[in-house]
Image (spheres, one colour):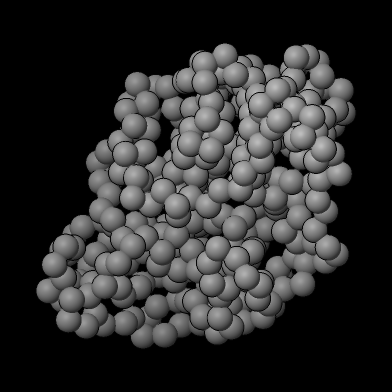
Length: 334
């Protein structure tokens, strides 16, 4: 049987157990030109909360009754004359929160478990890594000597953003929640400084760590943190709007920045990004980041939890902050 998590109710505010329904159905059979994939790991990302809303976005909202949308990595266990994938191949794509999926292969790409652990392919070498790579290099346009500020810095995207900025010769300060995460940023990932937004005054600490202001702000949280960052912009600063996790569970209207005139004064730019725009260049990014990982310049961290039935409580960790690095759910049963 195939355990599947169905999306059954659009949440208002935080998603809860009533948002989904866990069901078991027969394992599907691949038609001509399709493959059956036994999924090993599911990617949990903040963007999933936005996909649940019935509003216009960069991707169609999920339909009620559909399998919960999610990135995944797994093994092809049956190929019905598929032109690209054969039995035994490991692949990554958007398989959803289920143990098995059938696909024609569109949007899937091969991965090698001998080169990196499978969870890495839905983390640093997957969509979060791609987001970090193109976000900081193409949208942030970092250059050597820049002062870079990253929010959500201990997360899947932010941790990679900061490391890439360091590789490129920037001064990097991260914002994260809790002393443990801040120590991780500085001591393990090589950030130049870290701000604990839960226990420190962000405005004051930002002045201390970035006395001359910031050239690039990579924003994953929005809200008050974005507003504070706007007060510290240097001339021609770039702000990358990647996410706004502080706003995703709002029951009220989203809070926008009140200090936006700083963009005018400093001739700065604020640009939103969606990683799909660089889909044709994913291979380029994965190859470069693979080299950095082999050189020990780029570290990857995954927080792996087990059991498809534990999806709701694992999903909550995205918003409670009770994880470090990329959040992954193992759905393969022994």
